[in-house]
Length: 357
Image 1 (cartoon, rainbow, N blue to C red):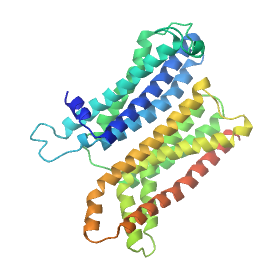
Image 2 (cartoon, helix red, strand yellow):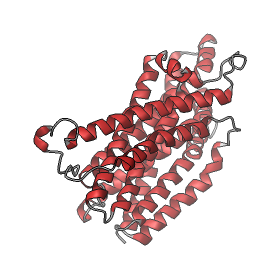
Image 3 (cartoon, rainbow, N blue to C red):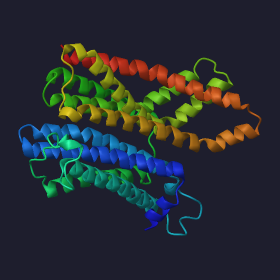
Image 4 (cartoon, helix red, strand yellow):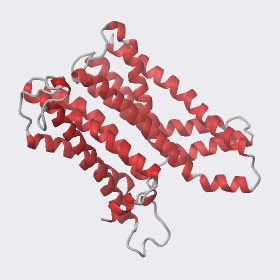
């Protein structure tokens, strides 16, 4: 009940973020139901399709975790321990709020899926979606509820794990592991070729590697900005970027992997293209992944901006011009773009070579 009351009393921006989580959960749930219906109609090759559908689930869970971390209701406040809302209780509240948003999205996905199949009140759109969704085959109720239940359960568990009280790691800690996983992913892609389950394994390793390397890359960008006798502007931009690296690094790495996948698809367009494991819904699924990655990074940036608000206020009180703060923000964004674009292009080129060797 406390989680629901906090959700009802939140600001419009917080409610919008939760609606984004619900919308992403609805899209992921629809894809999972589509895979289930396809498995009932054509059991052969259904397991690889289910594995490919877990990619939208992963980015949806990542978005839900970042939104929960940015929720002001989950932030520790002075005097909350005396009211029984310590760090562990706030983590539980965040997990419940995340589960509620994801469950609403999953329920919406089930309602839309059944409506398009004609299982609710006739076939809409002259039955255009009946063949695509295999309306001639019965949908297993237990299987559908199990797959849809994966979304809120996984998201709430990941939220509780991410928001638990723990000592933060240095941003550079995951950089060597990320580089190693990215190299392993490229090696798997080169060994497996453009077909088979090795493509999914290679892409997954590459994406996880870039996500782990993201904080280290953002920290390195901050070091480059303030290198070689920096002035006040470069020093401010570099230090802030280093401080924000743990927050914006993982979403930045995920977005780099999505950009690399898009560049790889463009590079292989004239060579047969990439496999379409989810059939007609492959490109909508790719769009869902890209939108979730972009929304996750944007939410992390907004959260980081809110975290440095006291320092910004102190600088303004000391007489710092507002254009200096805007110039520092532009310098940080330019440094990240200057590093991430070549990185995405390089990973895409290596992936293209691995898939067409």
